[in-house]
Length: 102
Image 1 (cartoon, helix red, strand yellow):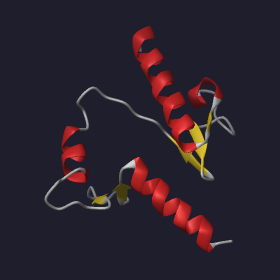
Image 2 (cartoon, one colour):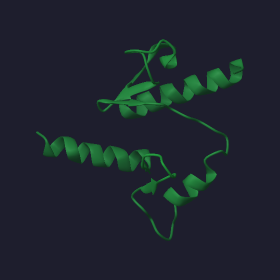
Image 3 (cartoon, rainbow, N blue to C red):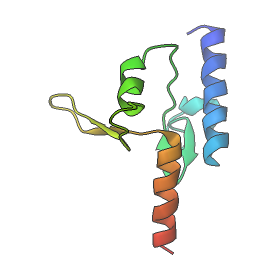
Image 4 (cartoon, rainbow, N blue to C red):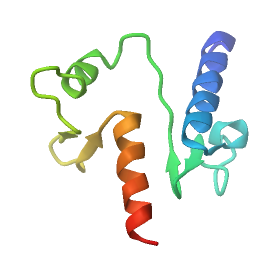
């Protein structure tokens, strides 16, 4: 991985940490153990991925103006389910959940 890719990744990790009120893990999780993953927020460990256009289809599904889904559920054979949603929707859901648990 080149310097520009590392810098882009670090920028996105910092951006996500700031937006979520989380913390960026030192060295982007390269050390393993408690330093695994990229960002810690909401009691979860996040891997942050960024691509110029690599997620276009996924964005098309999540941001579909006709369907207006809250989230998209994804499944590959013999793999676990994934759920994808906008950060705004995620923050809305997690804030509601935290209010209900108080």
